[in-house]
Amino acid sequence: MKKYCSIILFIFSIILATSCNWFNGSSNKIIHKDLDSIITDGKLKALINYSSTSYFIYKGAPMGFEYELLKKYADHIKVELEVIPIKNMDSIFFSLNKGVGDVVAANLTITPERLKDVQFTHPIIITKEVLIQRKPDDWRKLKKAQLQKSLLQSPKDLINKSITVREGSSFYTHLKDLSDQIGGPININTVPGETTMELLIAQVSDKEIDYTVADKNIAVVNQWQYPNIDANLVIRSDQRIAMATRINSDSLTTSMNKWLLEYQKTKNFKMLYNKYFNNQAAFNKRVSNRYYTLISGNISPYDELIKKHAPKTTWDWELFAALIYQESHFNNDAIGWGGAFGLMQFMPETGAKFGVDSSSSAEANIIAGTKYINNLNKIWETNVTDSLERIKFILASYNVGLGHVLDAQKLAVKYGKNPTLWEDVGYYLLHKSEPKYYNDDVVEFGYCKGFIVYDYVNEIIERYTHYKNMIIESELAKQ
Image (cartoon, rainbow, N blue to C red):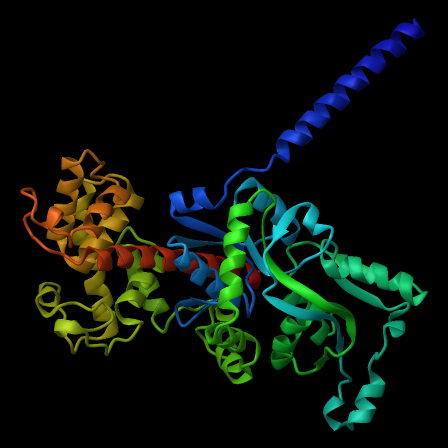
């Protein structure tokens, strides 16, 4: 009996092991999506982390070193850039290889361990890993020599010190290596993947932890905000910072490398780098501004008014704010081409229909804007039943007028496309400056610079996504 039990147990263990291996293999399967698919889709999906240098919203506009770099590359290959905020650094490569994003931009160090899972682009920054330590409370009163003496100055000084880093970071691996090299233990405290490098720096400043490690380029920027931290003790030199791509995305990686190598030779790249890493005055101005969304959660001076009146429409307040930014950059005194005025940039004739003129208050403009949006929604709701698609039709109508959008819809019907899908209707609006289309028998309103309208819709939808991302992050940070 024992013999049969042993045989059954042996067979069961083989089946279990096989099934586990099959499960792990299938769950870790890497999606194949390279440059050709990205261009066909018309969208590059970027996993980017929130930080004061990578990606944030300032005065209603998305900014950040990696964000702007990827935006320029996306423009180069003629696709849109979709930002997917990183929530957990420990799962970014899994998300990348599963196809959640196509590229990761998160101030990542190239390491042999990571190269087993992903590819890296040509380095965008060469930096150092440095210890973040807190200066004494009376550091401003100390002479330079006294201050230096009060701080750890050599890697050997780290023996028996407690340093807090993320376990999946390159810092963790390098600290373990350093502990072996200096002949004494370094106590490494680990934190989960949701904890950012900048949060750990802030915790050192606030006396919540004693030490952490950061990349020098990030440390310098954070020293502007937290002058009581020191970042002079080098843990590791010549660290290559790059963007990561899927291990099978050879064409994308090659394309990015070719573009990067050329772009890094230009003055524009130097200006972009200096904008985020060598401009303390601009940084201080940003982080102290009430419309630095990463800290304040505010987008504009009119957030409360927009939140108050946007519910009168079917739109989120962030979408309404994205429209206002596109129209006036939140400037109620703005006067545009043809006499367009105010936050909503109404033309005089349209404004009169909704009870506003160039002397009207910001709130009156917003109220009139909700009425106009509702008016357009009623026109489109029976024709375009999908609410998300309808938003794009409303935005296009807001920008260029109803007639040209209806013309594009008629063209979509004529050429066998879906007249309720913006991708199809937008195509014909985009080409409505071509004689073949604006002279077509079904067209009533003639020539239109449709590319302006097409970009207008895409830019507002993109900005809306940025606003939603940043507001959610800001609210989570306050919890």
